[in-house]
Image 1 (spheres, one colour):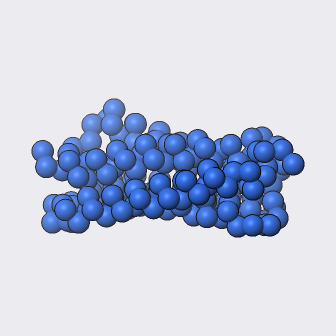
Image 2: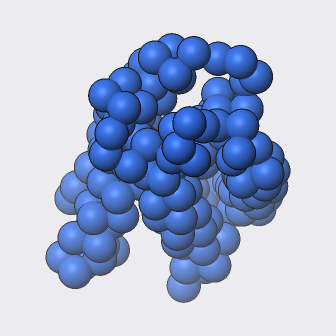
Length: 166
């Protein structure tokens, strides 16, 4: 079986990503707890925190699903596709709520947030569909999903921890 379609050869990667995403969820909770009073005053910040949480949960859950031993490729493909759709829907809606009518988010920042949100979620879907079809990159899509998810979530955590103080 080609490496792109063999989760067993990816076990170290998925183990590392599960740990990293769990650690980043902890960082996000610290950021939110430190500035909770300020965050709950503005619904856009609450939605930004939710988007970061959904993004990191996507990485954590995808990594966990990929570490299930002996799982049939069709099941993993279905699971990743459904997970990707849920991550896409939740992060897209959260991103829109966080930036829509937000006076603090300029157009350039809004465009960057939209792009990062899509680059974080869509590769999960592509990876799942690719596993179902048996071609098109397979699990390599999850590398892109993970990288962009971490970038997006870290930017959100930075805003919730540091930028909120300005």
